[in-house]
Length: 332
Image (tube, rainbow, N blue to C red; front, side, top):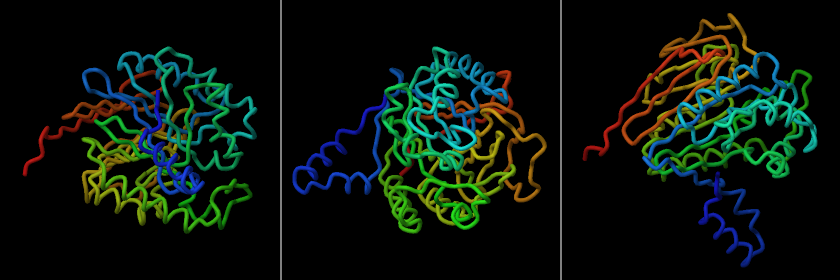
């Protein structure tokens, strides 16, 4: 299970004791959770997104196959790329959708591990504070959802980024939807501060593998396509700091795109329930390695020298496999 970094806790206590301003420090530095690797120093996890539909649209079938693959790979945890509860997030901490779409669906023994989750745009249409509440962790201890945070395993550092506030249209043309922007008093300041934290974290990271997770795609040939705000503001930071993978949901498909200007691999896993058959854009197909418009999920396995990414459909069939090798010691 995740453990809050002791250094962050110690600093927080110091600020609280000296100034009574612990909350200011927490808002300025992302919370960091330590998640150890296996004894052999390897790491494996599943990635699923856009899933919470009380088992409908093949959510239960995807969950079943996740359990099988999770056991086979002896996964350490699960990553959720957002849109955790449809159609409009959770209404409160007591909303039955939490158990009916999460606890009662992902029941396999192998999935009884920590779940690290980011918020999606549909989650922002509900009560965001409820989904972030520690009360949910009392209902199901697997659940950990924050706006932005870091998971460190020494081998890999995973930076979870709250991408919904980046999208200007949610503020200017909500199309009849109501978004819960509590905690985001100024969109401009929120994005600016978050980007600074992302850049600082990636620059300081000594992890062998650098991974960033967000809900929205930077690159996608699916329904929503590229997210222009992320390509403008976030992508240059990833490229400049040797990020290996950007993992996301939002488009209800599975896809793998290679960046043309850096080693970054864009991995979409947003097919946890309802998929959009035949919904593929003809624009910006450069670097496209794989696209699938049905339901499924993804696995990621890491050692110090190798990474393997595998996409599966709703029946557990392997659709796409991609391997990457790194030197054990960087040349001087």
